[in-house]
Amino acid sequence: MTSQPPVANAHLRTAVDAAERAAAIHRRDADVTNAVEYKSRRDLVTAVDREAERAVRSLLTQRFPDHAVLGEESGQDGEGTNRWIVDPLDGTTNYCHGVPHYGVSIALERRGRLDVGVVHHTPTGDTYTAVRGEGAYRNGEPLSVSSTDAVEASLVGTGFSPGTEPDQRLLEVLQSVVHSAHGVRRFGSATAELVAVANGTLDAYYRTDLSPWDTAAGILLVEEAGGTVTDFRGSHANRRETVLATNGRSHDEFERFIRRRLDD
Image (tube, rainbow, N blue to C red; front, side, top):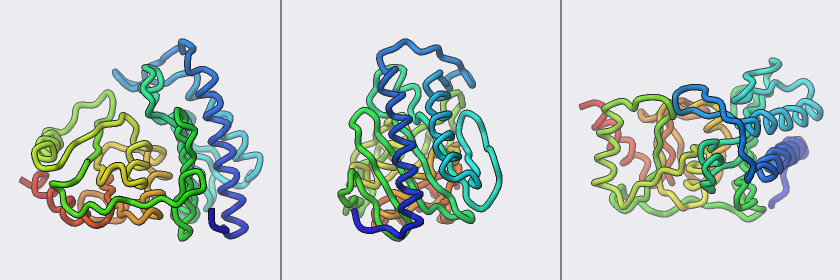
């Protein structure tokens, strides 16, 4: 990995350490039947989610006691211009069913801007890192988005939030993407799908009803790998509920493609 500024290095090292702690908890209990609770009809939370978040929070607050921490399971602790955004187990349903698309996502937001992002993909042990202005990496090797430049040649990722009924217009968008793109995939983890755009596996990803912990680290990874992330109307996405992430070459075409169907 290229040399990082000293402050960014400290933040990045901490995020990697925290992600590895959470992943160790994932691995320890992967073959154990976990008590499952339901946030909504199909939105799960397990003891692993909660224990992993406690482990991440503990390390972050130990090393940076003046930083706020926002986590999926426990909300936000602290205030200030520096805030960590944590999903301790993104892809809980996959984890419970043994589907190998889950991991931990940790990002640092400084004065409202994403500056550090780390995703650890637990099943493979791969660690994805990004520092703003310094590129994106997998296990220290540079990442790059794909070179596909048209919707019809693109492999596209999408998803729907558990426990909610998708908007009929979004179902029509999905139908159009199925007919127009090279293929459509749903991993069941927004973090994994954003990483797939960053590493060139997917050419584009779109989704609504997201939370900051779903997207923060992944957005920075895509941008630092050379891609583009906005909402469906072209506004810059920092940690938005609605995300369109692409390799950049086909971004305008995808944006027009989605907007035409949403505006009909």
